[in-house]
Length: 564
Image (cartoon, rainbow, N blue to C red):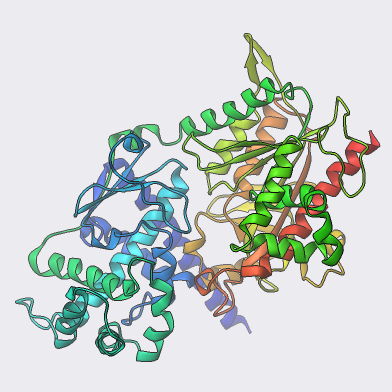
């Protein structure tokens, strides 16, 4: 029994070392200002990623091209990046006022700009985690592109295989491909990628866009084309960091603007001295929980709350969502669309203007009724920046005004290490991966609050990871089996708690008796093959856990407010 345990531990140690090498290297390259991903300067990153073999990137260490991982990164990188030899990471440097049209990836809120045929600019406004995320995805993309090159270049002169010639002809054809032409192209592409015709067919439509139903073929061709040009002709792809982003990183420039906008709005509406409850969540669950019973009273008579929430979550029901949103605005909701660069929208709810919640109208019209601030999800280290700035006092007429923060609630998605998608995790501590930092805290939410709801509920520690795209089974299994009692992994918890503890215990910006609520629902189980983030989203399975957590947070807020 000892030998397998040692093997597992050695693999976990290798993985830990690989992650550390990656982050040290990425910081070094950032300070340096540029590097060539497939050159000598990018070698450490490539080797570390291949050693790590993250679950999201599947077959990265094999000769065949990884399809699900490719789909995962393409949804998080700007459209057309596979065609660019020069990728420039910038700060917010004024491109929004230019003729360049912003490109926003489907699964990551960041502004990107196609400068010309060869260059893509990506704006970094969310801190180091965003840089780590992008560089990791790009490293994976370049590794996969070289697999394509190695499969089609048949001699030193750069002559290519018949499969590549046929793929080139298919993507060069004007107009739509017939079914016959498409299937011929898929056959040749399958040979190049080391995959079966069925495997390509299965993922083909997942890559399709409205303007380009054959995006998959174009993506593979563009990746291979640049890799061939690099290997045969020496035209290296380059990633650069602008001087401005290197100068601004870590200075809380965007977070300060964002937080001051919130506090200025509270002051303008005479809410700054009220008791405040901060919730980090999405932009729909709190609003829908508070106002759908009022706005959709007739609908609720025929359906359960969760059925209504599922309908509100459907992209088709725009009118239904607008009805709830209009009612929320009518009853005092203030919307703050972000213009600071954080990409974090905010909603403010004055509970004195809420006519009733679940039939309870005790707070309506009450002058000292609490205020709820809902902030959209932060990204990695950005959680520290935004929470740190939000909890600072606000200067009104040269006088420091402290917010009366009564509770802070963090709800989010996380990877689970036991159980499955949709199950709940109620942590009592956050462990910061790669450091000795740990943050135990008393959680107002308990597993007993969610029992009997048909979902698994687990309590224990959460690991705040440096990037979800870097996790592998060996490391996670070690965390899970150790005495740390780790139940899941996410990217923001330790950063939030670091800011909260500093504000409460060191700076005195908020009370050290502030109530804390942390709850996560499982978006994936990285220890199960086929259940990683690359296997797809939760869909409607995420509705029930999202609203269960939201209702419990609001229930506690209202109970505390009405008992005072």
